[in-house]
Image 1 (cartoon, protein in one colour):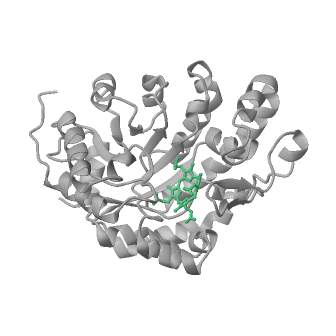
Image 2: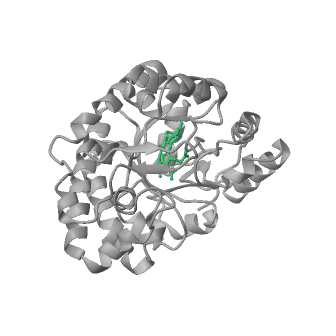
Length: 347
Ligand code: CP3
């Protein structure tokens, strides 16, 4: 069975002796070969040059027998295409060129044709697919409208994290206009990704946890649902929602093939609660890869054992690989997951 078949079978909740494995931020600063390229090019140069984006995407696949590649880009290319640029601060974190606070700011954002500016991503996808063939799966991704709005309204980390929630509560009309515009661009972009030949599209709702559970449906999930509809069954959608205060059934019912969770969620319990038409993806703590290799192996085995024989399981970290991760620990993780076999459970 190819890695790509394994990945697609897991999303369809078919029985497998071991789960497929990939990592969020599998290409990035923990790899010396990434840092070497970054020393010569800015992040945006790497992301906007299809040959370079393809090379970075493939870096972790050359080192490790991962089952899927994720195209090298960022969720913030969407606001950037709408006319709101960002930069990565030297000391880490994001800085947006301006924040959206009023109708006048909203008027500065482009919707029509914005997604087309992201053609460099689909070009990079074409190059990666040509090199990977059908051996391994390839993912595209997009931020959720709520999470993108969090950057556009709150600004980067360290800024006022409540500004978007305040807009939702105090100026519902402005909130809906903003989210409607972002969603329109995200839907165009998802259509482009789905047609570019990716095997799945991950939607990152990294800041979904800023919503209290009673507003999540209106503030975030309704816009995500439109993106899932835009994929139109051409590529399965994986929905990553960070945190644990969600109505998981409502997320599962948004139409995604899989729900992806962080390490604060009890994954076997989530698997029990969701129907076997929706896969779960998760959720090793990225911190488990920071210390000794033996600890990394034990943590991976414990998650594998807890999910042994269950259908509809994709193994991933609960969040991105941290830049300080020793690359050897990722090898140990990959070896541990690949060596695992378990018989399917009755249910
Ligand atoms: O390998 C992959 O996973 C694909 C590449 C990828 C990046 N960003 C590259 C990146 C993906 C899938 C993302 C998604 C992303 N970007 C999310 C959602 C997932 C998550 O982490 O919650 C978010 C919230 C962002 C926004 C973002 N990009 C932040 C907050 C930062 C700065 C923090 C940091 O890690 O430095 C980035 C920068 C970024 N995106 C880097 C990479 C490799 C590091 C930039 C560098 O090389 O200088």
